[in-house]
Image (cartoon, rainbow over all chains, first blue to last red):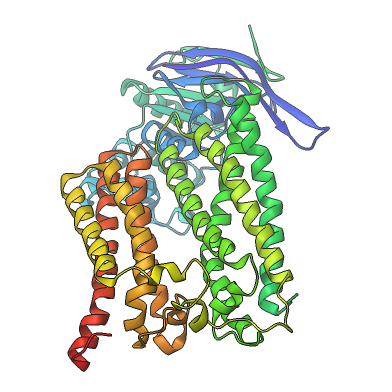
Length: 223
Length: 319
Protein backbone atom coordinates (compact mmCIF):
# COMPACT_ATOMS: atom_id res chain seq x y z
CA UNK A 1 0.00 0.00 0.00
CA UNK A 2 2.73 2.49 0.98
CA UNK A 3 6.14 2.21 -0.63
CA UNK A 4 9.17 4.42 -0.21
CA UNK A 5 11.78 3.76 -2.89
CA UNK A 6 15.33 5.07 -2.40
CA UNK A 7 13.99 8.14 -0.66
CA UNK A 8 16.37 10.86 0.42
CA UNK A 9 15.26 14.13 1.97
CA UNK A 10 17.69 16.97 2.55
CA UNK A 11 17.03 20.44 3.86
CA UNK A 12 19.18 23.18 2.41
CA UNK A 13 19.69 25.72 5.18
CA UNK A 14 22.04 27.68 2.96
CA UNK A 15 24.41 26.87 0.08
CA UNK A 16 27.02 25.32 2.38
CA UNK A 17 24.80 23.85 5.06
CA UNK A 18 22.68 20.93 3.90
CA UNK A 19 21.05 18.63 6.43
CA UNK A 20 20.12 15.17 5.23
CA UNK A 21 17.12 14.10 7.30
CA UNK A 22 16.66 10.69 5.65
CA UNK A 23 18.92 8.94 3.20
CA UNK A 24 18.17 6.19 0.71
CA UNK A 25 15.20 4.82 2.62
CA UNK A 26 13.39 1.77 1.23
CA UNK A 27 10.22 0.79 3.08
CA UNK A 28 6.97 -0.93 2.28
CA UNK A 29 3.80 -1.02 4.41
CA UNK A 30 0.80 -3.24 3.76
CA UNK A 31 -2.83 -2.21 4.12
CA UNK A 32 -4.08 -2.54 7.71
CA UNK A 33 -0.61 -2.74 9.23
CA UNK A 34 0.40 -0.86 12.35
CA UNK A 35 3.98 0.30 12.02
CA UNK A 36 6.06 1.92 14.70
CA UNK A 37 8.98 4.06 13.60
CA UNK A 38 11.30 4.32 16.55
CA UNK A 39 14.44 6.28 17.10
CA UNK A 40 15.89 9.23 18.93
CA UNK A 41 14.84 12.81 18.33
CA UNK A 42 16.22 14.05 15.01
CA UNK A 43 16.64 10.53 13.61
CA UNK A 44 14.29 11.21 10.69
CA UNK A 45 11.03 9.59 11.88
CA UNK A 46 8.88 12.70 11.43
CA UNK A 47 10.41 13.33 8.01
CA UNK A 48 9.28 9.87 6.91
CA UNK A 49 5.78 10.67 8.15
CA UNK A 50 5.68 13.98 6.32
CA UNK A 51 6.78 12.24 3.11
CA UNK A 52 4.04 9.61 3.42
CA UNK A 53 1.51 12.37 4.09
CA UNK A 54 2.75 14.39 1.07
CA UNK A 55 3.50 17.29 3.37
CA UNK A 56 6.93 17.47 1.83
CA UNK A 57 8.61 16.12 -1.27
CA UNK A 58 11.72 13.97 -1.26
CA UNK A 59 14.98 15.29 -2.63
CA UNK A 60 15.22 12.08 -4.64
CA UNK A 61 13.38 8.76 -4.79
CA UNK A 62 9.64 8.28 -4.74
CA UNK A 63 6.74 7.64 -2.40
CA UNK A 64 3.93 5.51 -3.80
CA UNK A 65 0.58 5.05 -2.06
CA UNK A 66 -2.00 2.72 -3.60
CA UNK A 67 -0.12 2.90 -6.90
CA UNK A 68 -0.14 6.70 -6.95
CA UNK A 69 3.21 8.52 -6.97
CA UNK A 70 2.36 11.00 -4.27
CA UNK A 71 5.84 12.51 -4.20
CA UNK A 72 5.20 13.77 -7.73
CA UNK A 73 1.91 15.49 -6.96
CA UNK A 74 1.55 19.24 -7.28
CA UNK A 75 0.41 21.16 -4.18
CA UNK A 76 -3.25 21.09 -5.19
CA UNK A 77 -3.29 17.36 -5.82
CA UNK A 78 -1.26 16.69 -2.66
CA UNK A 79 -3.93 18.58 -0.69
CA UNK A 80 -6.64 16.43 -2.26
CA UNK A 81 -4.65 13.28 -1.49
CA UNK A 82 -4.26 14.30 2.18
CA UNK A 83 -7.90 15.24 2.45
CA UNK A 84 -9.09 11.89 1.15
CA UNK A 85 -6.48 9.52 2.58
CA UNK A 86 -4.69 10.83 5.62
CA UNK A 87 -5.67 11.43 9.23
CA UNK A 88 -3.14 13.22 11.40
CA UNK A 89 -2.54 12.89 15.12
CA UNK A 90 0.02 15.37 16.34
CA UNK A 91 2.09 15.46 19.49
CA UNK A 92 0.59 18.79 20.56
CA UNK A 93 -2.85 17.89 19.11
CA UNK A 94 -2.99 21.10 17.04
CA UNK A 95 -6.57 21.80 18.05
CA UNK A 96 -8.17 25.25 17.90
CA UNK A 97 -8.58 26.15 21.61
CA UNK A 98 -11.45 28.62 21.23
CA UNK A 99 -13.65 26.29 19.20
CA UNK A 100 -15.87 23.60 20.62
CA UNK A 101 -15.07 19.91 20.43
CA UNK A 102 -17.61 19.43 17.62
CA UNK A 103 -16.26 22.35 15.58
CA UNK A 104 -12.70 21.08 15.91
CA UNK A 105 -13.68 17.61 14.78
CA UNK A 106 -15.56 18.78 11.68
CA UNK A 107 -12.80 21.21 10.64
CA UNK A 108 -11.36 18.79 8.00
CA UNK A 109 -14.83 18.56 6.41
CA UNK A 110 -15.13 22.29 5.77
CA UNK A 111 -13.35 22.30 2.37
CA UNK A 112 -15.40 19.33 1.18
CA UNK A 113 -18.73 21.16 1.35
CA UNK A 114 -20.81 18.26 2.58
CA UNK A 115 -24.45 18.85 3.44
CA UNK A 116 -25.30 19.43 7.08
CA UNK A 117 -26.92 16.03 7.67
CA UNK A 118 -23.88 14.20 6.39
CA UNK A 119 -21.54 16.30 8.54
CA UNK A 120 -23.69 15.60 11.58
CA UNK A 121 -23.69 11.88 10.82
CA UNK A 122 -19.91 11.73 10.53
CA UNK A 123 -19.50 13.83 13.67
CA UNK A 124 -21.79 11.61 15.73
CA UNK A 125 -20.05 8.47 14.52
CA UNK A 126 -16.55 9.56 15.52
CA UNK A 127 -17.61 11.21 18.77
CA UNK A 128 -19.31 7.97 19.82
CA UNK A 129 -16.35 5.92 18.65
CA UNK A 130 -13.88 7.91 20.75
CA UNK A 131 -16.20 8.54 23.67
CA UNK A 132 -16.28 12.33 23.52
CA UNK A 133 -19.97 12.98 22.71
CA UNK A 134 -20.75 14.33 26.18
CA UNK A 135 -18.21 17.15 25.64
CA UNK A 136 -19.25 18.18 22.16
CA UNK A 137 -20.13 21.78 23.04
CA UNK A 138 -17.23 22.36 25.43
CA UNK A 139 -14.42 24.59 24.25
CA UNK A 140 -11.27 22.58 23.67
CA UNK A 141 -9.16 24.80 25.95
CA UNK A 142 -11.28 23.58 28.88
CA UNK A 143 -10.55 19.88 28.26
CA UNK A 144 -7.95 17.69 29.97
CA UNK A 145 -4.94 16.38 28.01
CA UNK A 146 -6.51 12.96 27.49
CA UNK A 147 -9.78 14.46 26.29
CA UNK A 148 -7.93 16.76 23.93
CA UNK A 149 -6.16 13.79 22.47
CA UNK A 150 -9.44 11.94 21.93
CA UNK A 151 -10.73 15.02 20.09
CA UNK A 152 -7.57 15.01 17.96
CA UNK A 153 -8.06 11.32 17.16
CA UNK A 154 -11.74 11.89 16.36
CA UNK A 155 -10.75 14.73 14.02
CA UNK A 156 -8.17 12.51 12.34
CA UNK A 157 -10.88 9.93 11.66
CA UNK A 158 -13.87 12.08 10.78
CA UNK A 159 -13.20 11.76 7.06
CA UNK A 160 -12.64 8.01 7.37
CA UNK A 161 -9.05 8.08 6.04
CA UNK A 162 -7.22 4.95 4.97
CA UNK A 163 -3.99 5.98 6.64
CA UNK A 164 -3.47 7.39 10.14
CA UNK A 165 -0.22 9.22 10.78
CA UNK A 166 0.69 9.76 14.42
CA UNK A 167 3.74 11.80 15.39
CA UNK A 168 4.77 11.21 19.02
CA UNK A 169 1.11 10.72 20.04
CA UNK A 170 1.81 9.94 23.69
CA UNK A 171 4.56 12.46 24.35
CA UNK A 172 2.21 14.69 26.36
CA UNK A 173 0.31 11.90 28.13
CA UNK A 174 0.83 10.08 31.39
CA UNK A 175 1.05 6.29 31.36
CA UNK A 176 -2.67 5.72 32.04
CA UNK A 177 -3.73 7.94 29.13
CA UNK A 178 -1.05 6.41 26.91
CA UNK A 179 -2.51 2.98 27.58
CA UNK A 180 -5.94 4.37 26.72
CA UNK A 181 -4.48 5.61 23.44
CA UNK A 182 -3.21 2.10 22.72
CA UNK A 183 -6.75 0.79 23.27
CA UNK A 184 -7.98 3.32 20.72
CA UNK A 185 -5.33 2.03 18.30
CA UNK A 186 -6.85 -1.46 18.69
CA UNK A 187 -10.23 -0.05 17.67
CA UNK A 188 -8.69 1.66 14.65
CA UNK A 189 -6.90 -1.55 13.72
CA UNK A 190 -10.26 -3.36 13.63
CA UNK A 191 -11.45 -0.74 11.11
CA UNK A 192 -8.62 -1.80 8.78
CA UNK A 193 -6.68 1.46 8.94
CA UNK A 194 -3.01 1.55 8.10
CA UNK A 195 -1.34 3.30 11.02
CA UNK A 196 2.17 4.70 11.04
CA UNK A 197 3.41 5.95 14.40
CA UNK A 198 6.65 7.80 15.00
CA UNK A 199 7.60 7.51 18.66
CA UNK A 200 10.36 6.90 21.13
CA UNK A 201 7.89 5.91 23.87
CA UNK A 202 8.89 2.39 25.12
CA UNK A 203 5.19 1.60 25.68
CA UNK A 204 4.90 0.90 21.96
CA UNK A 205 7.84 -1.47 21.81
CA UNK A 206 7.01 -5.18 21.66
CA UNK A 207 3.32 -4.34 21.71
CA UNK A 208 1.11 -7.20 20.45
CA UNK A 209 -0.93 -5.01 18.10
CA UNK A 210 2.11 -3.54 16.37
CA UNK A 211 2.93 -5.45 13.20
CA UNK A 212 6.41 -4.07 12.72
CA UNK A 213 8.89 -1.87 14.49
CA UNK A 214 11.33 -0.03 12.30
CA UNK A 215 14.29 1.67 13.85
CA UNK A 216 15.52 4.85 12.28
CA UNK A 217 18.97 6.13 13.13
CA UNK A 218 20.68 9.16 11.61
CA UNK A 219 18.25 9.17 8.70
CA UNK A 220 18.72 5.50 7.84
CA UNK A 221 16.71 2.39 8.55
CA UNK A 222 18.55 0.07 10.94
CA UNK A 223 18.21 -3.48 9.69
CA UNK B 1 12.65 62.69 -23.93
CA UNK B 2 9.73 62.92 -21.59
CA UNK B 3 9.97 62.04 -17.92
CA UNK B 4 6.61 62.68 -16.34
CA UNK B 5 5.75 60.82 -13.10
CA UNK B 6 3.61 58.41 -15.13
CA UNK B 7 6.42 57.64 -17.58
CA UNK B 8 8.88 57.21 -14.72
CA UNK B 9 6.45 54.78 -13.07
CA UNK B 10 6.31 52.78 -16.30
CA UNK B 11 10.12 52.76 -16.57
CA UNK B 12 10.55 51.56 -12.98
CA UNK B 13 7.90 48.86 -13.36
CA UNK B 14 9.48 47.77 -16.63
CA UNK B 15 12.84 47.36 -14.92
CA UNK B 16 11.25 45.25 -12.19
CA UNK B 17 9.39 43.24 -14.83
CA UNK B 18 12.58 42.70 -16.80
CA UNK B 19 14.51 41.48 -13.73
CA UNK B 20 11.85 38.97 -12.76
CA UNK B 21 11.21 37.92 -16.36
CA UNK B 22 14.92 37.12 -16.77
CA UNK B 23 14.76 34.86 -13.70
CA UNK B 24 11.67 33.16 -15.16
CA UNK B 25 13.47 32.84 -18.52
CA UNK B 26 16.52 31.13 -16.99
CA UNK B 27 14.29 28.73 -15.06
CA UNK B 28 12.16 28.10 -18.15
CA UNK B 29 15.20 27.19 -20.23
CA UNK B 30 16.35 24.71 -17.56
CA UNK B 31 12.87 23.18 -17.39
CA UNK B 32 12.52 22.88 -21.17
CA UNK B 33 15.92 21.21 -21.43
CA UNK B 34 15.82 18.86 -18.46
CA UNK B 35 12.18 18.22 -17.46
CA UNK B 36 11.23 14.57 -17.12
CA UNK B 37 8.04 14.08 -15.13
CA UNK B 38 8.73 10.37 -14.60
CA UNK B 39 12.16 10.91 -13.10
CA UNK B 40 12.59 10.77 -9.32
CA UNK B 41 16.01 12.35 -9.29
CA UNK B 42 17.11 15.27 -7.21
CA UNK B 43 17.35 17.38 -10.37
CA UNK B 44 13.75 16.69 -11.36
CA UNK B 45 12.42 17.57 -7.88
CA UNK B 46 14.44 20.79 -8.01
CA UNK B 47 12.96 21.55 -11.42
CA UNK B 48 9.46 20.94 -10.06
CA UNK B 49 10.08 23.52 -7.33
CA UNK B 50 11.57 25.91 -9.88
CA UNK B 51 8.54 25.48 -12.12
CA UNK B 52 6.33 26.82 -9.29
CA UNK B 53 8.61 29.82 -8.91
CA UNK B 54 8.71 30.52 -12.64
CA UNK B 55 4.93 30.10 -12.98
CA UNK B 56 4.34 32.46 -10.04
CA UNK B 57 6.58 35.12 -11.60
CA UNK B 58 4.81 34.85 -14.97
CA UNK B 59 1.36 34.96 -13.35
CA UNK B 60 2.28 38.10 -11.43
CA UNK B 61 3.74 39.77 -14.51
CA UNK B 62 0.43 39.15 -16.27
CA UNK B 63 -1.60 40.25 -13.26
CA UNK B 64 0.23 43.58 -13.31
CA UNK B 65 0.33 43.87 -17.11
CA UNK B 66 -3.45 44.13 -17.44
CA UNK B 67 -3.89 47.22 -15.23
CA UNK B 68 -0.57 48.55 -16.55
CA UNK B 69 -1.98 48.48 -20.09
CA UNK B 70 -4.80 50.73 -18.91
CA UNK B 71 -2.24 52.88 -17.10
CA UNK B 72 -0.25 53.11 -20.35
CA UNK B 73 -3.32 54.48 -22.14
CA UNK B 74 -3.89 56.89 -19.25
CA UNK B 75 -0.23 57.96 -19.53
CA UNK B 76 -0.59 58.61 -23.26
CA UNK B 77 -3.53 60.88 -22.51
CA UNK B 78 -1.60 62.70 -19.79
CA UNK B 79 1.47 63.13 -22.01
CA UNK B 80 -0.72 64.46 -24.84
CA UNK B 81 -1.36 67.53 -22.67
CA UNK B 82 2.29 68.61 -22.97
CA UNK B 83 2.75 67.76 -26.65
CA UNK B 84 1.90 70.60 -28.98
CA UNK B 85 -0.78 69.48 -31.38
CA UNK B 86 -1.79 66.30 -29.60
CA UNK B 87 -5.39 66.13 -28.42
CA UNK B 88 -5.33 62.58 -27.02
CA UNK B 89 -3.16 59.46 -26.82
CA UNK B 90 -3.25 59.08 -30.61
CA UNK B 91 -1.01 62.12 -31.01
CA UNK B 92 1.56 60.64 -28.61
CA UNK B 93 1.46 57.26 -30.37
CA UNK B 94 2.04 59.01 -33.68
CA UNK B 95 4.73 61.34 -32.31
CA UNK B 96 7.46 58.77 -32.97
CA UNK B 97 8.01 55.91 -35.40
CA UNK B 98 7.57 53.40 -32.59
CA UNK B 99 4.16 54.25 -31.14
CA UNK B 100 1.99 52.16 -33.43
CA UNK B 101 4.28 49.11 -33.21
CA UNK B 102 4.36 49.44 -29.44
CA UNK B 103 0.60 49.61 -29.21
CA UNK B 104 0.12 46.55 -31.43
CA UNK B 105 2.84 44.68 -29.50
CA UNK B 106 1.17 45.49 -26.18
CA UNK B 107 -2.14 44.05 -27.37
CA UNK B 108 -0.41 40.94 -28.79
CA UNK B 109 1.47 40.45 -25.51
CA UNK B 110 -1.75 40.64 -23.53
CA UNK B 111 -3.12 37.81 -25.66
CA UNK B 112 0.14 35.86 -25.32
CA UNK B 113 0.21 36.14 -21.52
CA UNK B 114 -3.49 35.36 -21.22
CA UNK B 115 -2.92 32.27 -23.38
CA UNK B 116 -0.02 31.27 -21.12
CA UNK B 117 -2.28 31.55 -18.06
CA UNK B 118 -4.89 29.29 -19.69
CA UNK B 119 -2.17 26.80 -20.62
CA UNK B 120 -0.79 26.88 -17.08
CA UNK B 121 -4.22 26.42 -15.53
CA UNK B 122 -4.85 23.44 -17.78
CA UNK B 123 -1.42 22.01 -16.94
CA UNK B 124 -2.05 22.22 -13.20
CA UNK B 125 -5.40 20.51 -13.61
CA UNK B 126 -3.65 17.24 -14.47
CA UNK B 127 -1.62 15.16 -12.03
CA UNK B 128 1.04 14.45 -14.66
CA UNK B 129 1.31 18.12 -15.72
CA UNK B 130 1.31 17.39 -19.46
CA UNK B 131 1.83 21.00 -20.61
CA UNK B 132 4.79 21.96 -18.41
CA UNK B 133 7.45 21.81 -21.13
CA UNK B 134 5.11 23.37 -23.66
CA UNK B 135 4.10 26.29 -21.44
CA UNK B 136 7.69 27.17 -20.53
CA UNK B 137 8.80 26.85 -24.14
CA UNK B 138 5.94 29.19 -24.96
CA UNK B 139 7.18 31.60 -22.29
CA UNK B 140 10.69 31.59 -23.81
CA UNK B 141 9.13 32.76 -27.09
CA UNK B 142 6.85 35.19 -25.23
CA UNK B 143 9.88 36.60 -23.40
CA UNK B 144 11.27 37.99 -26.64
CA UNK B 145 7.97 39.68 -27.49
CA UNK B 146 7.85 41.00 -23.93
CA UNK B 147 11.46 42.27 -24.09
CA UNK B 148 10.74 43.92 -27.44
CA UNK B 149 7.78 45.69 -25.84
CA UNK B 150 9.87 47.00 -22.94
CA UNK B 151 12.68 48.16 -25.22
CA UNK B 152 10.35 49.84 -27.73
CA UNK B 153 8.44 51.47 -24.89
CA UNK B 154 11.69 52.92 -23.50
CA UNK B 155 12.78 54.12 -26.92
CA UNK B 156 9.36 55.62 -27.66
CA UNK B 157 9.19 57.75 -24.54
CA UNK B 158 12.88 58.63 -24.88
CA UNK B 159 12.50 59.81 -28.47
CA UNK B 160 9.51 62.08 -27.94
CA UNK B 161 10.60 65.60 -28.76
CA UNK B 162 8.64 68.10 -26.70
CA UNK B 163 9.58 70.97 -29.02
CA UNK B 164 8.22 69.27 -32.09
CA UNK B 165 4.62 69.72 -33.12
CA UNK B 166 2.69 66.48 -33.57
CA UNK B 167 -0.50 65.62 -35.42
CA UNK B 168 -3.80 65.39 -33.60
CA UNK B 169 -6.03 62.35 -33.94
CA UNK B 170 -8.32 64.20 -36.35
CA UNK B 171 -5.42 64.40 -38.80
CA UNK B 172 -3.98 60.93 -38.17
CA UNK B 173 -7.28 59.11 -38.54
CA UNK B 174 -8.59 60.94 -41.57
CA UNK B 175 -8.99 59.92 -45.20
CA UNK B 176 -6.48 62.58 -46.21
CA UNK B 177 -3.78 61.08 -44.00
CA UNK B 178 -0.74 59.66 -45.75
CA UNK B 179 -0.44 56.74 -43.32
CA UNK B 180 -1.59 53.18 -43.95
CA UNK B 181 -4.63 53.91 -41.74
CA UNK B 182 -6.09 56.11 -44.47
CA UNK B 183 -6.53 53.00 -46.65
CA UNK B 184 -9.21 51.81 -44.21
CA UNK B 185 -11.33 54.84 -45.02
CA UNK B 186 -11.22 54.03 -48.73
CA UNK B 187 -13.30 50.89 -48.09
CA UNK B 188 -16.99 51.35 -48.76
CA UNK B 189 -19.07 51.33 -45.56
CA UNK B 190 -21.61 48.88 -46.97
CA UNK B 191 -18.88 46.35 -47.78
CA UNK B 192 -17.25 46.92 -44.41
CA UNK B 193 -20.46 46.49 -42.43
CA UNK B 194 -21.54 43.47 -44.50
CA UNK B 195 -18.19 41.84 -43.74
CA UNK B 196 -18.44 42.74 -40.03
CA UNK B 197 -21.96 41.39 -39.54
CA UNK B 198 -21.29 38.51 -41.95
CA UNK B 199 -18.30 37.32 -39.94
CA UNK B 200 -20.28 37.68 -36.72
CA UNK B 201 -23.14 35.60 -38.12
CA UNK B 202 -20.72 32.97 -39.43
CA UNK B 203 -19.03 32.89 -36.03
CA UNK B 204 -22.44 32.39 -34.38
CA UNK B 205 -23.15 29.54 -36.79
CA UNK B 206 -19.79 27.93 -35.98
CA UNK B 207 -20.65 28.38 -32.29
CA UNK B 208 -23.90 26.45 -32.80
CA UNK B 209 -22.02 23.72 -34.72
CA UNK B 210 -19.22 23.73 -32.11
CA UNK B 211 -16.31 23.61 -34.59
CA UNK B 212 -13.39 24.63 -32.36
CA UNK B 213 -10.69 25.37 -34.97
CA UNK B 214 -13.08 27.25 -37.20
CA UNK B 215 -14.34 29.17 -34.18
CA UNK B 216 -10.79 30.30 -33.37
CA UNK B 217 -10.20 31.41 -36.95
CA UNK B 218 -13.51 33.27 -37.01
CA UNK B 219 -12.47 35.08 -33.83
CA UNK B 220 -9.19 36.22 -35.39
CA UNK B 221 -11.11 37.56 -38.39
CA UNK B 222 -13.70 39.12 -36.09
CA UNK B 223 -10.98 40.88 -34.08
CA UNK B 224 -9.44 42.40 -37.22
CA UNK B 225 -12.72 43.48 -38.83
CA UNK B 226 -13.99 44.80 -35.50
CA UNK B 227 -11.06 47.15 -35.07
CA UNK B 228 -11.33 48.33 -38.68
CA UNK B 229 -15.09 48.99 -38.46
CA UNK B 230 -14.67 50.61 -35.06
CA UNK B 231 -12.20 53.13 -36.47
CA UNK B 232 -13.83 53.55 -39.84
CA UNK B 233 -17.55 53.48 -39.08
CA UNK B 234 -18.76 53.06 -35.50
CA UNK B 235 -16.32 55.60 -34.06
CA UNK B 236 -18.02 58.40 -36.02
CA UNK B 237 -21.33 57.57 -34.30
CA UNK B 238 -19.72 57.44 -30.86
CA UNK B 239 -18.34 60.94 -31.47
CA UNK B 240 -21.37 61.99 -33.52
CA UNK B 241 -18.88 63.56 -35.93
CA UNK B 242 -18.57 62.22 -39.49
CA UNK B 243 -14.85 62.95 -39.79
CA UNK B 244 -13.63 61.83 -36.37
CA UNK B 245 -12.27 58.28 -36.30
CA UNK B 246 -9.88 58.24 -33.34
CA UNK B 247 -9.67 54.91 -31.45
CA UNK B 248 -8.41 56.73 -28.31
CA UNK B 249 -10.74 59.67 -27.70
CA UNK B 250 -13.65 57.52 -26.55
CA UNK B 251 -11.43 56.30 -23.71
CA UNK B 252 -11.72 59.78 -22.22
CA UNK B 253 -14.24 61.11 -19.70
CA UNK B 254 -16.03 63.14 -22.43
CA UNK B 255 -17.35 59.83 -23.74
CA UNK B 256 -17.92 58.30 -20.30
CA UNK B 257 -14.87 56.04 -20.76
CA UNK B 258 -16.97 53.82 -23.02
CA UNK B 259 -13.83 52.83 -24.91
CA UNK B 260 -12.66 50.70 -21.98
CA UNK B 261 -15.93 48.77 -22.11
CA UNK B 262 -15.74 48.40 -25.91
CA UNK B 263 -12.17 47.12 -25.88
CA UNK B 264 -12.76 44.88 -22.85
CA UNK B 265 -15.74 43.20 -24.55
CA UNK B 266 -13.78 42.71 -27.76
CA UNK B 267 -10.56 41.45 -26.18
CA UNK B 268 -12.24 39.10 -23.70
CA UNK B 269 -14.64 37.74 -26.32
CA UNK B 270 -12.00 37.10 -28.95
CA UNK B 271 -9.48 35.76 -26.46
CA UNK B 272 -11.82 33.06 -25.17
CA UNK B 273 -12.78 32.33 -28.78
CA UNK B 274 -9.13 31.91 -29.73
CA UNK B 275 -8.29 29.49 -26.93
CA UNK B 276 -11.13 27.09 -27.80
CA UNK B 277 -9.13 25.82 -30.75
CA UNK B 278 -5.60 26.47 -29.60
CA UNK B 279 -5.51 24.38 -26.46
CA UNK B 280 -6.73 20.90 -25.60
CA UNK B 281 -8.99 21.32 -22.62
CA UNK B 282 -11.82 19.28 -21.18
CA UNK B 283 -15.26 19.62 -22.73
CA UNK B 284 -16.74 21.46 -19.76
CA UNK B 285 -14.15 24.22 -19.93
CA UNK B 286 -14.29 24.40 -23.72
CA UNK B 287 -18.05 24.82 -23.49
CA UNK B 288 -17.54 27.63 -20.96
CA UNK B 289 -15.02 29.32 -23.27
CA UNK B 290 -17.42 29.05 -26.23
CA UNK B 291 -20.15 30.71 -24.19
CA UNK B 292 -17.97 33.48 -22.74
CA UNK B 293 -16.67 34.24 -26.22
CA UNK B 294 -20.04 34.42 -27.93
CA UNK B 295 -21.62 36.41 -25.08
CA UNK B 296 -18.86 39.05 -25.04
CA UNK B 297 -18.63 39.25 -28.83
CA UNK B 298 -22.43 39.58 -29.07
CA UNK B 299 -22.43 42.34 -26.46
CA UNK B 300 -19.71 44.09 -28.47
CA UNK B 301 -21.82 43.90 -31.64
CA UNK B 302 -24.98 45.02 -29.82
CA UNK B 303 -23.23 47.94 -28.09
CA UNK B 304 -21.63 49.24 -31.28
CA UNK B 305 -24.77 48.70 -33.36
CA UNK B 306 -26.77 50.76 -30.88
CA UNK B 307 -24.72 53.91 -31.56
CA UNK B 308 -25.81 54.42 -35.23
CA UNK B 309 -29.38 53.23 -34.45
CA UNK B 310 -29.78 55.69 -31.56
CA UNK B 311 -28.20 58.43 -33.67
CA UNK B 312 -30.67 57.73 -36.51
CA UNK B 313 -33.67 57.66 -34.15
CA UNK B 314 -32.60 60.97 -32.62
CA UNK B 315 -31.62 62.78 -35.81
CA UNK B 316 -33.39 61.00 -38.66
CA UNK B 317 -30.21 60.84 -40.76
CA UNK B 318 -27.11 58.65 -41.08
CA UNK B 319 -23.66 60.17 -40.87
